[in-house]
Length: 452
Image 1 (cartoon, rainbow, N blue to C red):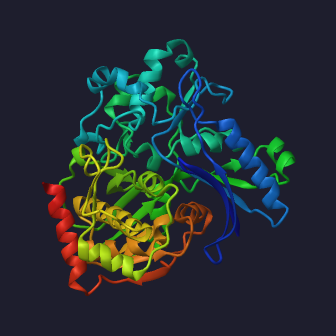
Image 2: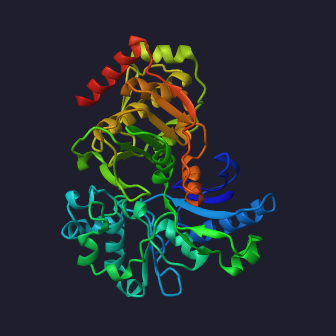
Image 3: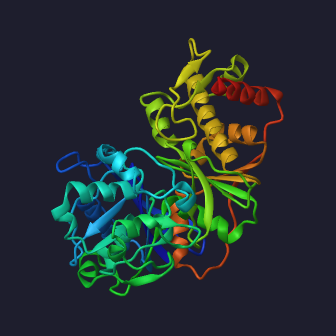
């Protein structure tokens, strides 16, 4: 079976063809996902994305038959639609700081961390804060809303005409979901939003075939099924839930680096350090932590060479060239620290790249420690291709790290929604912690520096 996966990340959108027989991506189309910075507030360019999606379908279906469609998107995003399925307000960009204007009012009504597993986050990273701000600032438009949809299910609605919601997106630091009762949080009832919430459907549910006009436009079979879809980090986690034996951890990398622990050590999560409870595709709570590592990597390496040598690595380790957090303040395990370089005089391009990679790995290791990560760690997404990141992550955790071979772990996971439930094997090179003491000494020096 060939599954077309709509995979919308914060920075890039993709349509990937996944062959379920081999669990491999056999074709990929990409599109830069940039927000529209126009009135009434910065928002996602859903029409440009829609054109890209349909054009990709039309292009790809000329190459081979598409048997099903699945969807995965970034979190912290939702849509308000009317009875005809049209947006009543643009889909707000979660990096817009408008919701902070009503922070005190929102804090008075949001549920505590113990109820939702959701930390209080800045800007629009709590979806509940977005909806709250939209209702207060645009009351006339808000009253036209017939449904609140999570972002994957907004695209499912456009494809099928069927409105639904799903737990992995509802449980992604939204303030809207109680993972312990598998029901909406007290905020939803306090704000009178329950009547707007589309029915919750499992991620694996077939919502229906594509709409007839889409079949005509794209050349897809009119009976092509569309699956409900799920949050992108949980899409990365799904293959491992189906095949790996706990304890294990999965690190999903993209704009955000999201660490998830399954069967790990029992720890008390610290919401002040951007730990949270995600909800996986099976509906179970998953201790998680994240930081904006992909964004940091892009900013730190922009216009810089990413070539390096073993001599560069040896020099960075020996000199203890350290990059300390955080390039992107306000989230992650060190939200109030400013980035700082130590022993960084006269660095070559290769040495600078090594130090950046080590910084990202050590921050990821901190996230895994905060959520009780145990067992092998699998890295999905772009960072899986960074051998320096992988080696330092193994050194910092003292556990093996598996670098996923797929370029987009989210696409494989989302495609599995269309499978018969058969388990799959994790694939990728396994890296054990380096034996040389200089790696452990570097880890110790970095950790000591961030504590001061």
